[in-house]
Length: 256
Ligand SMILES: O=C(O)[C@H]1O[C@H](OP(=O)(O)OP(=O)(O)OC[C@H]2O[C@@H](n3ccc(=O)[nH]c3=O)[C@H](O)[C@@H]2O)[C@H](O)[C@@H](O)[C@@H]1O
Ligand SMILES: [Mn+2]
Image (cartoon, rainbow, N blue to C red; front, side, top):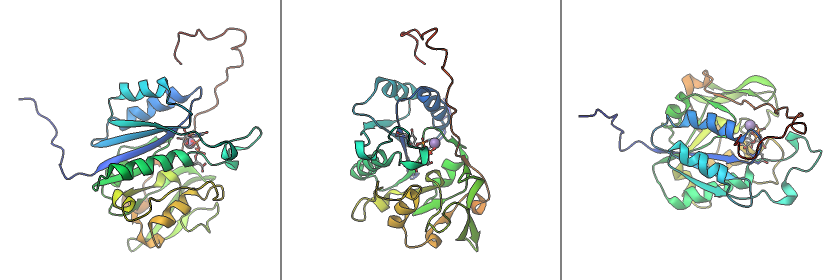
């Protein structure tokens, strides 16, 4: 008989929510992302394209991954979109995409699930998925390479988050990155579905969202040895130099 790993039927499903958009490095980023999350059991991958229509590229990447998932799309509205000359920090990314996913997950009605916002370009340990699986309400852990620091992390005293190792806008109620927390799906079923807003200040998305889930940072459940282990890195893919393309064009039948 073939030996199979027995999956605990009570184990919560992890909904991994990934906004994405068409760009030169998208297949590279999503390939690396898939190579990590394909090792995570009992998960459902929600990919939301920032686009007016679903793309063949994402459909294909999702199908080839073999990961159970849902392909959604919603274009960031004109007025809140990146305009020419705007710097990266001047506009929100992923707001409408994550909101759509939240509504979808709420409608799916799974009462035994965890929700995690995982951007397509970060680096994730497998351990972070084991840690978030234990979430009762909202779990939290450190993230490296963010906020102009080597890492940002909650400081835990007697099992509670009391302050933060964060220097960028430390006055935020929850001064922490999108990749630093996960929450239980029960929080989607207590009334209005929590959402992100374009109206919030740049860099205040996480704090604004968490304020809808919890009363105080002390309600957070610290993971990763009381928030002392780096399990996620806020990496970014470099802009690829294609300045010689005009001299020798890519062949249209080669998928990059
Ligand atoms: O506050 C913000 O605006 C963002 O800042 C940081 O993220 P950062 O690495 O700077 O941003 P990206 O990785 O470029 O974008 C975050 C996610 O949104 C997607 N995205 C980006 C750009 C875009 O136009 N549309 C879109 O859907 C990306 O594929 C990615 O999954 C945070 O890590 C994000 O979670 C947060 O949404
Ligand atoms: Mn990123």
